[in-house]
Length: 453
Image 1 (cartoon, one colour):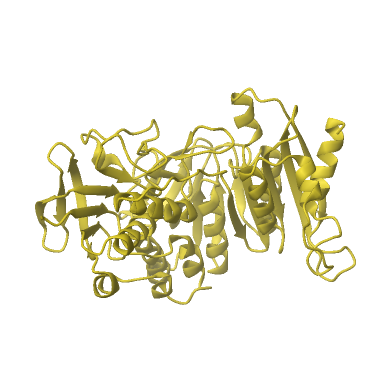
Image 2 (image 1 turned 30 degrees about the horizontal axis):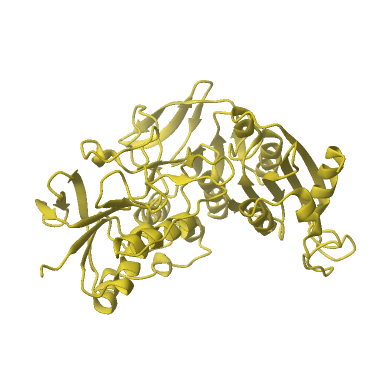
């Protein structure tokens, strides 16, 4: 009997989680992974902390090398191999070997697409100039670190105020650069409601970041092919380093003629089993859609947690098992210096589009008992269904000890808990960790009073 062959496109979180799961379930199947960069199975989320110097070397972000995958798991992970085209009619992929500068077709019986996401940049002049970086791969992180060492830039401009923008602002401040941020909307962090985004805006200004709101990138200026300025619709900003922080888009352009269904945003459409519309093709990670448990609609999110989980689900099903990815509630967390930011569930603007009646409240509290040393400020916003009191979303901004409280709200959302359920939770208490009433419960008590329940 002919041995089956699984081809995986992409060798990071989703791809290698799937490959490892398949190998655990099936010792016989041939597994080939094509990864266009020099690295497999690394922590992309750690890149800003490597650039800041908090993590001393890029090697510490690598979980397993291609050699380790081959020796321990019999997985053939081929770095510097980029898939250019997928031919689902003939079960084959066109591969470019970047080292030998050759191309070849590789046949498959089963295929997993796990190509991740890429930093978004509009089609503006000079966007490929030296000194302009997205932050999505370990290679990009190493290039940024080398660029800072080689050229000693003084003025950094971050275009976009998302998670990467905040984390890279911290990294560059630590490296001694003057940091400016250009944001298209009034407040940064469009994954928060504007009233909570205002808190982040103030925090970043306190840290020394200059913020230009309501400004749109027009183009970049260069000198000798290197970035020299960022031009917006209002001003020209001197820059010798630019970070793209406008979000992530699915890395799926090579699937254009593959017959694999894509969403409007370019993400691969998948069932809850991670299978695509093509029988023997699956997709997982930052290139694929997932399902939002609150809105009950397809959802695109670029997060390492989701990539690893969906990779395992895909691997289980590719190996012949039966597994379903339940979905997500959109939980995310990040920090900039001493400030922590977290969110989960839906925003007010998303609920308005869904025509869901809701109520909301925002409270200010402390991360510890008010009398305990180093108690920090925390602001919690909750959103609940006006009719039932069911939690619909939550956002937290604060200092040390604030952000991980979002996990309580994420658990509540996943289990469809109401405000009353949250108030009744037996959460831990001791003065070094929390007030008697935890801030998330204080917010729930205030909001339920608005409902008269």
